[in-house]
Every structure is written in C-alpha cells, then in structure tokens.
Length: 107
Image (cartoon, rainbow, N blue to C red; front, top):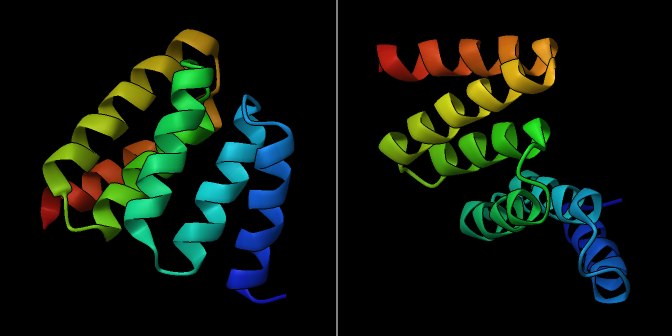
C-alpha cells in the first residue's frame, strides 16, 4: 500500500471518527511517511488536542516538526512529550524522545 493510499484510508476513518486520537495519530504517521510534514504536524497536533497525555502523538509531532524544518518547535514538542511520558509512565516513548532530542541538539 502506498503512503497516498494509507492517507486516503485514514482520512475516510477520520471523517467517521473525527474525535479519535488514534485515528489522528495514524493519519499523521501516514502523512509523515509521504513526506507531507506540515500535514503531519496538523494531525499530530489534533491528536494531542484530543488526548493531551498521548505520548506517541507528542513524539510524532516532534518528528514532523523536524521534517518540516522547524527545529526549535520540535525541541519544545519533545520536551513536552518527555514531561508527559514521565507523568504517565510511558518510559519507552520517553527514551525515544530523549534520543531524538539529543540528536536535534547536536545539529
């Protein structure tokens, strides 16, 4: 399945379930895979709006912001995601975001 086909599928589901953060995360990931970083930023942001403690969405937002050439915002997204992940106990996602943040800081 191509990234464009994935996007189309997630869009259909998002129309049926517009307030589902998991669907928004999937759509954001599909956009990121298709190199449509700004669209991914929007969808990850929507997932966070719907579920503020969704650490995977914070991680996705950071990645999308990096790909969109917005490193300062990506750093802020990772820092917020790390804070949320520690509060919720999602330590695996925290570790991933810490790695992404260190790489970003080295650039």
